[in-house]
Structures are given as structure tokens and as C-alpha cells.
Amino acid sequence: MPALIPALNDKDLNKIIISIQQLAQGRNNAIGTVTLELNVGTTTVTAPNCGNESTVLLFPQSVNAAAEFVAGTLRIGSVSNGSFVITHVNSATANRIFRWVALG
Image 1 (cartoon, rainbow, N blue to C red):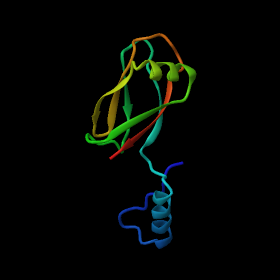
Image 2: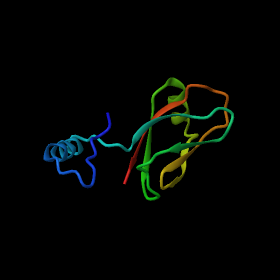
Image 3: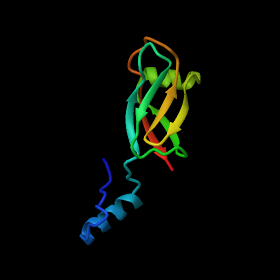
């Protein structure tokens, strides 16, 4: 669930308090799900809260994703403002689904 983000000019104290509480509870908007592209060696992920200094972590959500993760055949190839690239096996294997988080 995404965190509430009050507008810069928002004066509603309740929204601001809820936003701070959600951050303290670990909620943030720098997460998502990605399915690795088929028959290519890279997958680009659009991540609006990602910056070029972010650390991206991947968490397998399917059996095929777990197999690739354990095999050590994927890595974060590059990170930039608004996106990151996953380098992986060029495979026709479907359902390589990951959750991701971009920190920093």
C-alpha cells in the first residue's frame, strides 16, 4: 500500500501526521513488482522514486524467479533517476516475477 504524500502547500495537519506515521511504520512509495522480459537479457523498470544513488533490492515471488535468483544469473545492471535495469538470462522462461524496493 503506498504512503500518503501531502502536497507541498497542504495545511491539513491530519494528512501530515498520517504521512509521518506511515513512514515510521515502514510504508513508502519506492516499491513495485516486475516480471522479467522474455527472450532478452535485460528488463528496464520504471521507478519514479529511484535515484542514481539508490540501492535496488529484488525479492523473488515465483518459482522461476527464485530459480534464477539462486542461480546467481541476475543483477542490477544500472540505476538512474526514475528507472533501473535488471540484467538477467536471455530466456523463454515465463513467470520470473520479483518484488523490488529502491532505497536512497
